Amino acid sequence: MSDSNFKRFVEVGRVVLLKAGPSAGKIAVIAEIIDHNRAIIDGPLTEVPRQSFPYRHLTLTPLSLTKLPRAAGTGVIRKHLEKEGTIAKWENSSWAKNRAAIEKRRSLNDFERFGVMLAKKARRDVVRKAVAKAGKA
Image (tube, rainbow, N blue to C red; front, top):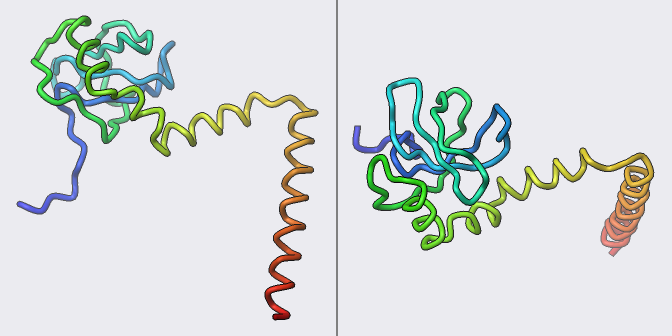
């Protein structure tokens, strides 16, 4: 199978998004593969401690650290993350931006949600008028 559909693999250096635990929502790097159920992850720049983590609570991202040695320590991982600018790449990705927007929307209070509703109504009115004007022309 030379033309595989799979693009993301569990590998040393793969950047992962944590789905569970106290660090849920943060990213980390696979430092070592333990077995077919768990890996050692480390996130020195995202406050994720080095720990064993099950794959079922990880989401593989398209980002990966190149030439990261197996069982690399926290300092080596930190250097690779800084050198390749992986954290900045993640924060500029549409995936991270969507997660941030959802989190911001969830944290709104009642008055802020009311303001969002009014802004959406105003935008909808402008679009409706522009479509009507274009339809007449």
